[in-house]
Structures are given as structure tokens and as C-alpha cells.
Image (cartoon, rainbow, N blue to C red):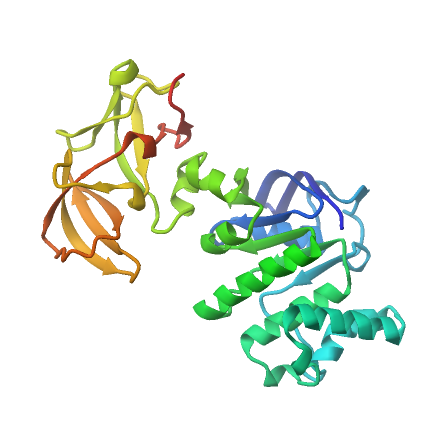
Length: 359
């Protein structure tokens, strides 16, 4: 396996820039997930690492070698695509061994490699089947097996689960995580699904508009999002945002919510100016429902999820959500009370950047 270094990488299609100077170090054996909405540049960056797109500026290194000018076949990487890309006229064993046969690898070594990969992925009984006789999940496992037998320096995954139903995606996430644990392989995985990102990654790279917004462990991004984009993208249900203005000094500082009449104590915050525009973020699961709570809201919609309930609320003209395990009958139009615990508040300035508590 090998480390991957991305240094000042830019990409433009004609006069349209899509990546704006990406810097990222992927450690040997690390599982990195590139996450973000469609069009953020994550798949383009993956294809540049694979050699399927040219680099407009900057350098990509695999191990200690710059690969900008190397053909994909010379980079010693394996890619798993969203579409599986299996040969329909070949059985599973031949699909998995195709790259080794192209390299004129000895038949004995090919057999051993296919057998080992099939064992890891539960494909032993399917080796004689053709792709049309396989389910979607089985086809994706074959695609991963084809990558494993090559024993590459790095694995690249381009939204490999997006064609599967919810239950299969859950199963395949476990397969991929188990495979990574067994192989210790350097892996870069692209997805727009933040649940996949949170459950698979050693570190997440959150991207938006061709720019890396934040890099960190899944819980780093959940607990301390760097800006409004990361705060709103990571977490399900999504974080609530309440708009207002910052007032006061020291521990008595508060944010007065737009619409007037309500304020939220937030304590002293570094760099915030008096009457400066501010946004309070709080996750639905951190809203503390309490009959004696400081704040009130009207229930607009109730969504049972089985494990808990998502409440859609309106507070002073601003829409928010609460997640609760309380199965009490809460009907649309009901009035509820709650608190906004200070330890769970995230404060963002006018530019949308995180503001830390002073001291």
C-alpha cells in the first residue's frame, strides 16, 4: 500500500474551474471519504487520482512518485465504479481475474488470488455464474473482488453503493469496512451520502464548490463543524439554524433571534461584534423537550421513524426540528416547550464560519 499526496491541485474544463487548489495527505492504510453534494468536485478529484482526468495545475503523488503524467495502468491503483463495469460474457472468476491474465500472471497465482478474494467477499459459490445471474449486491462484491486480486497500492471507490436499495447499501457498507480492516488498504471513497461517510471513514473530506471545507474524523465534523455548510451537511436529521444578532459582553452575551422577543444565552464568543449577524446551530437530537422549557413552539408535522420521532416545529417564524424518543401523542398544532442547552450550541458569524467560545 502507499500514501497519496494531493498538492495544490486545480481542474478546469475549458474556462470553467471546478477544483480550486486542493491539498490533502492520505496516509498509508487510511480510509478517506470525499463527501459533498453533486457538482462539488469529489468525483473529478477521484478521477484525477486514477488518471482518468488530466490535472490542470498541482501535483498528485502515489507513494514517493508524482503520477501526473502516468497512464492509469501505470499508477498501480484499482477503481470500483458505480456501474460495476463487469464483462457480461465472462463468469465471476474470469471477471475477477481479467487484469491478472492481461499481465500474464501464472495460472496458479491467479487461482490463489481469486480464491482468496472470493473467500473474503462470500463469492465462493458464485464463481461460475455470469453477471446477469447475480443480484446488485453480488455484482458489487464481484467488482470489489476484481480490485482486490490486483493487490494495488490504493483502492478508489466512486459512489459504489448508489444503485443499491437501502438494505443492500447497509450490508455492503459492512462488507467494505470489513474488507478495509482485513486488507489495511489505502482507500479513497466518494459519496454524497453522509451516513456512508460517517460510518466508513477514518477521516472525512467535506467538499463544496470545488473547495475542501473541512478535513477530520467523522465525530470531529459532527461535534465541531467548521462552517455552516459542514454543519448542515453532516448529521441526520440536519442541524437547525436560527438567525439573529449577537449582543452583550462576557458570560452575559446572547443572540437575539430575528423577529424580536427571544434571546439565547451563548456566552462570550471570540471575534463577534456588538449587533453582528450570527447564526445559532443546534442538532434536532440536542433540543431538550421540557414542559418548563424557556422556549415555545408549535408542532407542524410529526414523523415517526420507529426508533424515535422527528417533530417539525415553528418558533418565532423560524422552522426547526426536534428528535425525541418520547412516544407521547404529539399532534400537529400542539404547543410544546424546550430548552437550547448551551453546551450543544454551534455559533457561526456573518460569513458562515464557526465562532468558538472565548477563553
